[in-house]
Image (cartoon, rainbow, N blue to C red; front, side, top):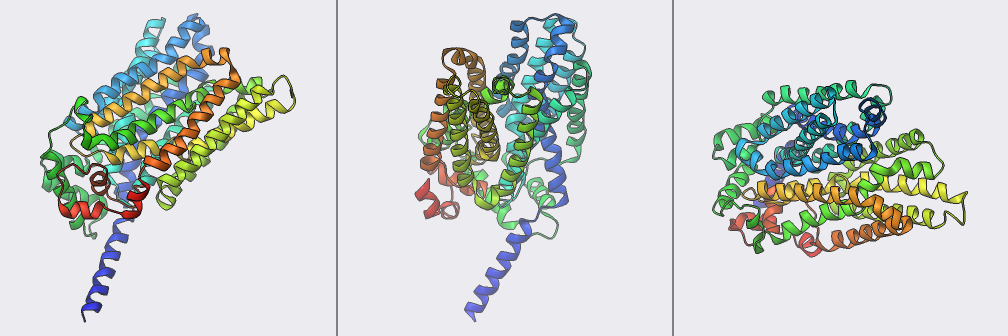
Length: 481
């Protein structure tokens, strides 16, 4: 009789788990509203390339002035990153997205009406501030509203929409005036701004600020009225209460033993992602294609054809194969891609016919591999590993590091290329190789685990309940981690 009762209990538990893992229409619509901000992110990144000739001709800008226009975006993003965590913690996730879109709308309008370079710079700086906030709050919000078995794929849609934003801006910019392109950039900003009043706040943030009843009703709304949320709601409440016994850490408070592993994983992945050469490939791919004997347009189309399907594949596989396998495959592919580009430059004088094809293949291998995992998964993991009492300051710090590294690579790339083209891409290839070792040794698998389980296992010195520590402990995962 006892065995039958246990079997029946397991069956009920399995049914509840499966029901909670089926995305509801409100969860899908809420995610789409959130990733409208990701599209804005992508369109801001992609704008400078198609707009370059129009802006430089109309406003008589030199190369140095336009370079400042392009690079000031990352400066603004660093400013936005610094305030993103505090803003999202004190005002809420929805309010942070709303503030970011106001910055972006003002930025696009300033660019659209610019008569002198200074207005361009102000507009681009405001866009960067909005991007810096969005790059933190969108993946955090999606991770906090989705069930554990769907979290990876849903959070990775952030990267997919960035790809769409970049690609469609390239495409539209090929046919439209730069001012009109900037005005069109306000449309997704307005779409997200209007949708924010119709989507729920993060239940985990509501629990953090003491609004427990609303947290549970929001969770029920997101999971569906017939889904039993009692276990998830209890876990959120208990972990939030345990976390709040810890002091609310500022950025300097992050550098404590209890947060060391989370910080190492989060910052390490972002640094390796950026120093692996992503911005060098993205910003200067056209010059690589030209040196390879291909037209800019054909090369760009080839990148889009590879990038979007591979990003979509990563979204699909995220919660099936797990984060670690995708990261290992992705880092291996980027390592190979950079090595092929390095080899093409090395062989440029020896095999002029073979070298261009090698460069094209290398760029496409890199782009496809990066899109599969290294593009989106570091942000997914960043949204999962930090406890609620440090999530704001930790997220701000990681996002700031991302944009700082992005600026360093973008600024230094031309100097490195003038020093040694083959050597530059060999350095990128080596860093991608180090990424493989980093993932294999330090990055935990977070697939199928609640945020509370992940955070308890990575931050063992926190005062959490025995129940949570037992849930968090997985011998196989800990062995790899």
